[in-house]
Image (tube, rainbow, N blue to C red):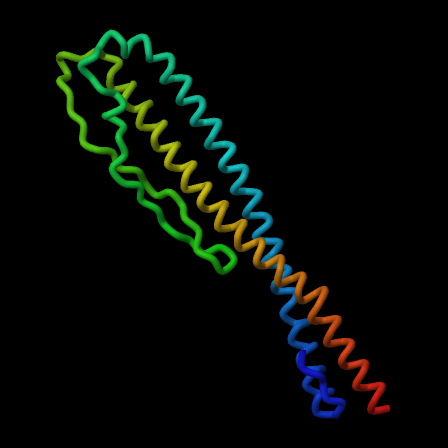
Length: 179
Protein backbone atom coordinates (compact mmCIF):
# COMPACT_ATOMS: atom_id res chain seq x y z
CA UNK A 1 0.00 0.00 0.00
CA UNK A 2 1.29 3.43 -0.90
CA UNK A 3 2.01 5.79 1.97
CA UNK A 4 -0.04 8.97 1.93
CA UNK A 5 1.66 12.34 1.64
CA UNK A 6 1.16 14.72 4.51
CA UNK A 7 0.44 17.80 2.39
CA UNK A 8 -2.44 20.18 1.79
CA UNK A 9 -2.85 18.86 -1.76
CA UNK A 10 -3.15 15.31 -0.45
CA UNK A 11 -5.65 16.51 2.17
CA UNK A 12 -7.76 18.08 -0.59
CA UNK A 13 -7.52 14.89 -2.70
CA UNK A 14 -8.57 12.72 0.24
CA UNK A 15 -11.50 15.03 1.03
CA UNK A 16 -12.67 14.84 -2.62
CA UNK A 17 -12.32 11.07 -2.52
CA UNK A 18 -14.38 10.93 0.68
CA UNK A 19 -17.08 13.13 -0.89
CA UNK A 20 -17.29 10.84 -3.91
CA UNK A 21 -17.46 7.72 -1.75
CA UNK A 22 -20.19 9.20 0.44
CA UNK A 23 -22.12 10.35 -2.63
CA UNK A 24 -21.90 6.96 -4.35
CA UNK A 25 -22.66 4.80 -1.28
CA UNK A 26 -26.42 5.61 -1.07
CA UNK A 27 -26.85 4.72 -4.75
CA UNK A 28 -25.24 1.35 -4.16
CA UNK A 29 -27.33 0.78 -1.03
CA UNK A 30 -30.47 1.55 -3.05
CA UNK A 31 -29.38 -0.89 -5.76
CA UNK A 32 -28.77 -3.53 -3.09
CA UNK A 33 -32.26 -3.00 -1.65
CA UNK A 34 -33.83 -3.21 -5.13
CA UNK A 35 -31.97 -6.43 -5.87
CA UNK A 36 -33.01 -7.94 -2.54
CA UNK A 37 -36.64 -7.20 -3.38
CA UNK A 38 -36.28 -8.66 -6.88
CA UNK A 39 -34.64 -11.83 -5.53
CA UNK A 40 -37.51 -12.24 -3.07
CA UNK A 41 -40.06 -11.79 -5.86
CA UNK A 42 -38.16 -14.30 -8.03
CA UNK A 43 -38.33 -16.87 -5.21
CA UNK A 44 -42.08 -16.30 -4.91
CA UNK A 45 -42.51 -16.57 -8.69
CA UNK A 46 -40.63 -19.88 -8.77
CA UNK A 47 -42.72 -21.27 -5.91
CA UNK A 48 -45.96 -20.27 -7.65
CA UNK A 49 -44.80 -21.82 -10.93
CA UNK A 50 -43.77 -25.03 -9.16
CA UNK A 51 -47.19 -25.25 -7.56
CA UNK A 52 -48.93 -24.77 -10.92
CA UNK A 53 -46.63 -27.35 -12.50
CA UNK A 54 -47.50 -29.86 -9.77
CA UNK A 55 -51.20 -29.26 -10.44
CA UNK A 56 -50.64 -29.93 -14.14
CA UNK A 57 -48.75 -33.11 -13.37
CA UNK A 58 -51.62 -34.28 -11.16
CA UNK A 59 -54.04 -33.68 -14.04
CA UNK A 60 -51.75 -35.66 -16.32
CA UNK A 61 -51.68 -38.51 -13.79
CA UNK A 62 -55.47 -38.47 -13.90
CA UNK A 63 -55.30 -38.99 -17.65
CA UNK A 64 -52.86 -41.92 -17.46
CA UNK A 65 -55.68 -44.47 -17.42
CA UNK A 66 -57.15 -42.98 -20.58
CA UNK A 67 -53.77 -42.79 -22.30
CA UNK A 68 -53.13 -46.50 -21.73
CA UNK A 69 -56.21 -47.32 -23.80
CA UNK A 70 -54.93 -45.52 -26.86
CA UNK A 71 -51.39 -46.30 -27.83
CA UNK A 72 -51.68 -44.69 -31.24
CA UNK A 73 -51.22 -41.17 -29.87
CA UNK A 74 -48.01 -40.02 -28.26
CA UNK A 75 -49.21 -37.18 -26.05
CA UNK A 76 -45.69 -36.45 -24.86
CA UNK A 77 -44.72 -35.98 -28.52
CA UNK A 78 -47.56 -33.48 -28.88
CA UNK A 79 -45.94 -31.36 -26.19
CA UNK A 80 -42.35 -31.58 -27.41
CA UNK A 81 -40.80 -28.11 -27.10
CA UNK A 82 -39.21 -26.68 -30.23
CA UNK A 83 -38.04 -23.29 -28.95
CA UNK A 84 -38.32 -21.18 -25.86
CA UNK A 85 -38.36 -17.45 -26.59
CA UNK A 86 -37.13 -15.08 -23.92
CA UNK A 87 -37.06 -11.34 -23.67
CA UNK A 88 -34.59 -9.45 -21.51
CA UNK A 89 -35.38 -6.50 -19.28
CA UNK A 90 -33.10 -4.23 -17.35
CA UNK A 91 -33.51 -4.42 -13.58
CA UNK A 92 -31.15 -2.32 -11.48
CA UNK A 93 -28.62 -2.19 -14.30
CA UNK A 94 -28.57 -5.89 -15.23
CA UNK A 95 -30.34 -7.80 -17.98
CA UNK A 96 -32.66 -10.52 -16.68
CA UNK A 97 -34.65 -13.00 -18.79
CA UNK A 98 -38.44 -13.35 -18.92
CA UNK A 99 -40.36 -16.07 -20.71
CA UNK A 100 -42.03 -14.71 -23.80
CA UNK A 101 -43.38 -17.84 -25.47
CA UNK A 102 -42.88 -21.55 -25.99
CA UNK A 103 -43.20 -23.13 -29.42
CA UNK A 104 -44.00 -26.81 -29.75
CA UNK A 105 -43.05 -29.24 -32.47
CA UNK A 106 -45.80 -29.70 -35.06
CA UNK A 107 -48.04 -32.61 -34.15
CA UNK A 108 -50.91 -34.04 -36.13
CA UNK A 109 -53.32 -36.86 -35.51
CA UNK A 110 -56.48 -38.22 -37.06
CA UNK A 111 -59.48 -36.62 -35.40
CA UNK A 112 -61.74 -39.53 -36.30
CA UNK A 113 -59.46 -42.19 -34.79
CA UNK A 114 -58.93 -40.42 -31.45
CA UNK A 115 -61.03 -39.92 -28.38
CA UNK A 116 -62.78 -36.64 -27.64
CA UNK A 117 -60.54 -35.94 -24.65
CA UNK A 118 -57.36 -35.96 -26.78
CA UNK A 119 -57.33 -32.19 -27.45
CA UNK A 120 -57.75 -31.43 -23.76
CA UNK A 121 -54.98 -33.86 -22.85
CA UNK A 122 -52.63 -32.28 -25.38
CA UNK A 123 -53.37 -28.83 -23.95
CA UNK A 124 -52.64 -30.06 -20.42
CA UNK A 125 -49.32 -31.57 -21.57
CA UNK A 126 -48.40 -28.35 -23.37
CA UNK A 127 -49.30 -26.26 -20.32
CA UNK A 128 -47.09 -28.50 -18.17
CA UNK A 129 -44.17 -28.10 -20.59
CA UNK A 130 -44.73 -24.33 -20.75
CA UNK A 131 -44.67 -24.16 -16.95
CA UNK A 132 -41.50 -26.24 -16.90
CA UNK A 133 -39.85 -23.80 -19.32
CA UNK A 134 -41.09 -20.88 -17.21
CA UNK A 135 -39.53 -22.45 -14.11
CA UNK A 136 -36.18 -22.80 -15.90
CA UNK A 137 -36.26 -19.15 -17.04
CA UNK A 138 -37.34 -17.93 -13.59
CA UNK A 139 -34.50 -19.91 -11.99
CA UNK A 140 -32.06 -18.36 -14.46
CA UNK A 141 -33.43 -14.91 -13.56
CA UNK A 142 -33.07 -15.64 -9.83
CA UNK A 143 -29.49 -16.87 -10.28
CA UNK A 144 -28.52 -13.71 -12.20
CA UNK A 145 -30.13 -11.48 -9.57
CA UNK A 146 -28.48 -13.35 -6.69
CA UNK A 147 -25.06 -13.11 -8.34
CA UNK A 148 -25.47 -9.37 -8.85
CA UNK A 149 -26.75 -8.97 -5.27
CA UNK A 150 -23.63 -10.69 -3.93
CA UNK A 151 -21.39 -8.39 -5.97
CA UNK A 152 -23.24 -5.24 -4.90
CA UNK A 153 -23.21 -6.37 -1.25
CA UNK A 154 -19.45 -6.83 -1.46
CA UNK A 155 -19.06 -3.31 -2.90
CA UNK A 156 -21.32 -1.77 -0.25
CA UNK A 157 -19.36 -3.50 2.50
CA UNK A 158 -16.10 -2.37 0.91
CA UNK A 159 -17.29 1.22 0.91
CA UNK A 160 -18.80 1.13 4.42
CA UNK A 161 -16.13 -0.87 6.20
CA UNK A 162 -12.89 -0.18 4.33
CA UNK A 163 -12.74 2.76 1.94
CA UNK A 164 -14.69 5.41 3.88
CA UNK A 165 -13.06 4.66 7.28
CA UNK A 166 -9.61 4.48 5.66
CA UNK A 167 -10.09 7.79 3.86
CA UNK A 168 -11.43 9.41 7.04
CA UNK A 169 -8.39 8.11 8.90
CA UNK A 170 -6.06 9.55 6.24
CA UNK A 171 -7.78 12.94 6.45
CA UNK A 172 -7.50 12.92 10.24
CA UNK A 173 -3.82 11.95 10.07
CA UNK A 174 -3.04 14.71 7.56
CA UNK A 175 -4.93 17.33 9.60
CA UNK A 176 -3.06 16.37 12.75
CA UNK A 177 0.29 16.60 10.94
CA UNK A 178 -0.56 19.96 9.34
CA UNK A 179 -1.76 21.41 12.66
